[in-house]
Image (cartoon, rainbow, N blue to C red; front, side):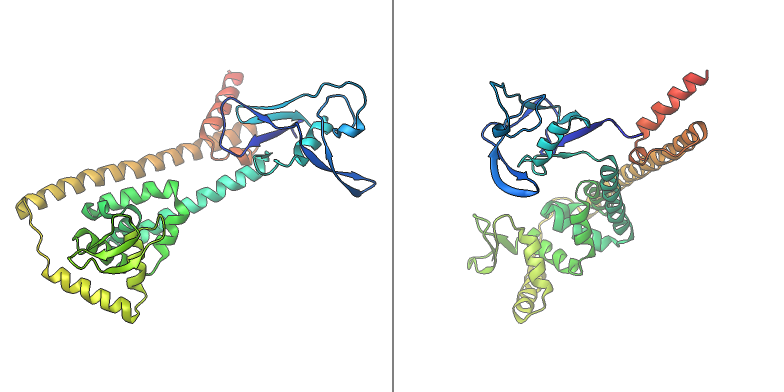
Length: 323
């Protein structure tokens, strides 16, 4: 059954407190007999036929429109208010008419993108995951073990699935790995203003320039993947400097291996728990959905199919009624 109300929701992320829609000194295009007669000043008053000020008579007191906790509920029979809200210049920019089906489609699309990103992680080998972790998280990821890389990328898939997909589908992850290695071994670095990638020696020679906010590892990896004369020379120089580079290690090799094994074991356990948790939630959702269909003799509403809390509450209500 259709709701008797229209629900308008803010699109600026505000979900608490009040938010006032500006109505004073606002002009909206007016139409007469289907023809555009230009912009006219509005005045929002209840009980009149038009919200255009020139169509109103008498000493009328204008009203205000407030959103409460991010939304505004307006009866569909209130044609004046609904028309004003949909023709206001801020409609579609700061608020929109909520559509349950459209919202469900949006959430389903987001879940599919996350699922695709997770699948790409599971299908990638360790070397590629390491390179992608370096490209996304920077030098800090260089010391991570395989499990840590996979775990952090799985978490990242839930918040930035599209960006992660693009990285995982790229063909230049080996170049990104080499770029990260060059940074981690202090063969290359960025200048103090982070506007260029330079050789980390007495020459401070410029390798490439960076735009504001660009990652040095990412851009150097892109350059090395182009396979031009310039990139080949840089690649060879990095290789030569890596061969000469010696790293002073404070811990013995055996201590490092033991520590890495302990860290990998801990991260594998955390990763296993994360996957098991998601599987358990999915199984509970399937079971609750089946009970709902059995008791209500119908499918769960489209916009509630993934809302486990809502389904469990509905099942509890009908169970209490049966008892």
